[in-house]
Amino acid sequence: MRRLWRRDRIDRVDETAPKKAIRRGLLMAMIEASKSSHPYEFVALLTGKKGVIEEFIMLPYESGETMAIIQTHALPIGVKIMGTVHSHPSPNPTPSDEDLNMFSSYGGVHIIIHYPYCQNCWKAYNVRGEETELEVID
Ligand SMILES: [Zn+2]
Image (cartoon, rainbow, N blue to C red):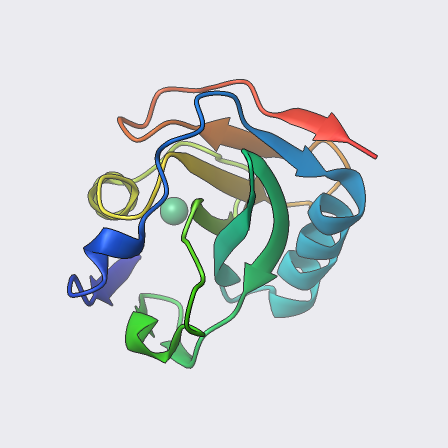
């Protein structure tokens, strides 16, 4: 999947908190959103506070089987990007080259949710695309 990301809001990327966690309800909502988007990809930015991912923000974007454009200039004021989430309509959760490019620009934690969108059908990666631990909290 090919993405064109605007790089003018790079100062709003939050890479300060070393330990990351995510709210369980949010993770389940993102898995649901991925399922509803199938066979297209679900794409969103992750935000939160103090290392805890609490929200995803879907920005205006054009989605297709081969391309999505996210307009990050539409981000609400004061929002810090902690990372990204997107889905793979295949059972393969491995980041693509385009994914790695995106990871390096948008925060410290990146979630890939994959087909068939079960509760454990996701993986978290760091900025370099290496699998990383992401604690799920209630
Ligand atoms: Zn991908």
